[in-house]
Length: 516
Image (cartoon, rainbow, N blue to C red; front, side, top):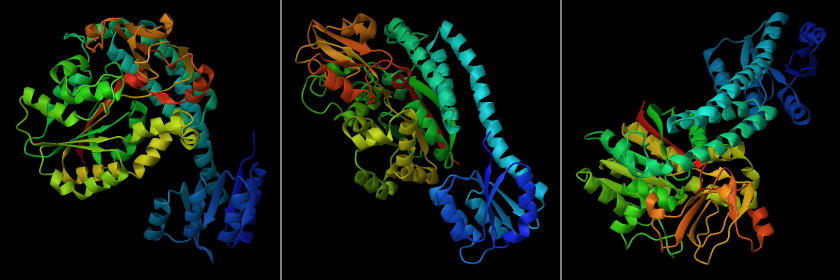
């Protein structure tokens, strides 16, 4: 095993020689510095496992050195101080030190701190890995006999939980295993959806909450009376992204209910989000609003009438007496503008706000090399989402909502999946361009790669003509045309797409929160 490297920083380092010799006899490798400047230079040029840092030094103080270390390095720091003054401890703890000791220290205190900070990490890593190995077997057994969408949700949530936990400990070997298990789960999930989706669209005991029933079932019955309510929809927010953002949001809110709903097919904004706001299936929207609905091949925006759809739904359900306003944030500037108008929002019963950033992020990964680099896999995609969120107008909006004491509903319209396997499709010039589903006539495809809807109206989808059909890609496939095939295969591989059938696209978070 590699020896632990320690950097000990103290302006009286020569007085600590007995402690250093003690640790060296225990097998640790010690380096020393007698001031903060030298310590920072050493940390920049050498990798250390832990730093012992004196608080009271001439020149750069211990606290200043601590802050400079954390600006550029992720390394545990143990603060050593002569003073027990409260402000020093608060400063140090506020800088997220790993531990602190009061002088004079003895060698055994140092040894205990080392074991607590380094061995604990090792033991945690082992515990997480061991727990997932146990869960792996349980999930594998569950996949053999899944009988309900509820069970699928539980399996997906477990996979997301362990994926995030393993990310924290950088367990690359285990991450490969969980990726394989997730792929197998999606393979089985596709078969389940293929067999049960049509029945979900019919009212019955087994019918899950779908896009078009979400507001009727989860929002309107839970509106606060005589207080403002906020419904925030983050386009394309996956369940795993929600779990990454959750700890930040919980600083301001209490989660009253965390649940999921199932996005309708296609898992694309044109269909899923219009259905959420209208309370209707796409077929019903096209019949009720023939002048507002646009099919895939038609020119023009497909989500320009969400406010009208929502007003109509509220009228039908008898909740139109509630004063509602609708906003869509597609640029940071508009998000900032909305913040300045926040007090005006408090005059409304229901504020509906759509945030489009995550959707733009997923599409940017296709179009921009830089985003491809930054979001190369699910972990980095989650990290990028978190970075955006911490610096976004959305977080500032959430803080204002929390302070106001309003009710908050947080959700999405669909998720997305990182695609990696191409599948050839042939269609005419009016065939839709989406990579995870196609709609059109005379489609040619590989049967094993897709779910087919030859009679779209049976699935409450509009048909452009009598021979129109829909196909939906399974697992992480993406649908490409034979023309210029190799170019498009390379261009779209490892990009985030939506519209098809996967747990990531269909199982969507719905969160009800109240301010702390």
